[in-house]
Length: 205
Image (tube, rainbow, N blue to C red; front, side):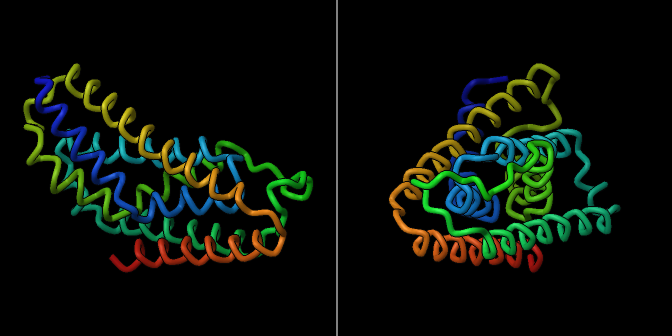
């Protein structure tokens, strides 16, 4: 595939992914509330969700998405429900300062975090609009070869790794500034509120 087309796509994806939305809100809120634990698995799920929508766009199944609108609507509400679940967990999370050992916080399974991140992206209307409405203006999807598809997927994962990684690092550093359990409790409830807001944004669009 022409490198200029890949560069244009990469820049558009960087701007689109970097603009705060439900996915970014979920990642940042999770890191602020729970630290780095599970951040990579959750973010990987969010990124793979992008690859799924990209693949559907390349295969030209936008019409199929309309045909099975009920299925995609169910996925959308499942993603919103998962965000609400995360919001509830963060609101009630134990207030442990970053300097204290997190002995009371059970470690979550990576596959559950991955599926959670995936469900968030699959139900995110912002991602759907990007791949089904904007992407055809950036790439000639009918001329994408197998090699071209691999290149686009590689660019997608690279860009999302940079964007998500940057947000994770910034959120992690911000969390380290907290020095008391009271501050952590307030942050947990603030991030829970943000997560709930992201769920509402997904469910109502």
